[in-house]
Length: 258
Image 1 (cartoon, rainbow, N blue to C red):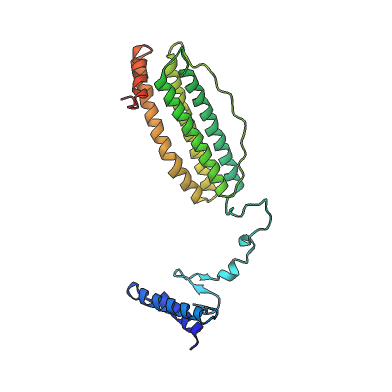
Image 2 (image 1 turned 90 degrees about the vertical axis):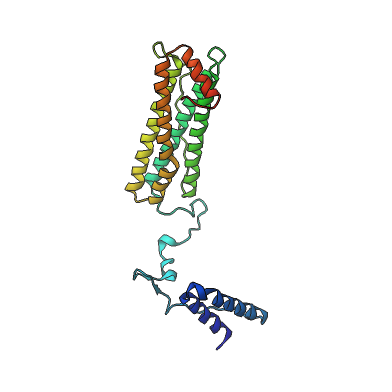
């Protein structure tokens, strides 16, 4: 038997061996391959199945060399076309673009609230820090969506951002409660948009996109809604006076309101 035939035979045996015998046959195969290279020969592995196909455990025939010739698997030559794109439909791509815009708009509003509470005639630094962190988090969400879209072979298209207000004081509620209620409404809006995005992934039979939204966003949104809901309730209790300053100090010290 030729050396190449021995190598192919060893491969076939390797596939059928138990874990206990796998290492022994694998070492034998490695010795044969090294010996062939020393002799200056070329290793040619024979087929490990009959013909050019194999039958999978579920009974389905797998013909790799024929299947990759199908048009859907042909690697494109055009430089402007993504090579990574597969089963990423236009509706999903457009919906992700819209969600990026939602995240950036909320980021912009949170940043405006940070600027308001950081002013010297407001000087609630704890609330300023809270909204600055919230703004950074929304921007990270947008960037994560952009990274995901590029990973799937899409094109990021940024839309216009709505200009937020610069004043957040309210005659009845005061600025802290008004701003926190606005933050809660925005978190619920983002969550509703993410749920709609998840539905689009389901409708287009894109389980990977659905899993991405669930694992990276939905759990975090539920936690954020609960936290801000607690803050709204606490600010309603303390009113517009000294209680707001005390609430602000807890945020500033990093302990959070309790």
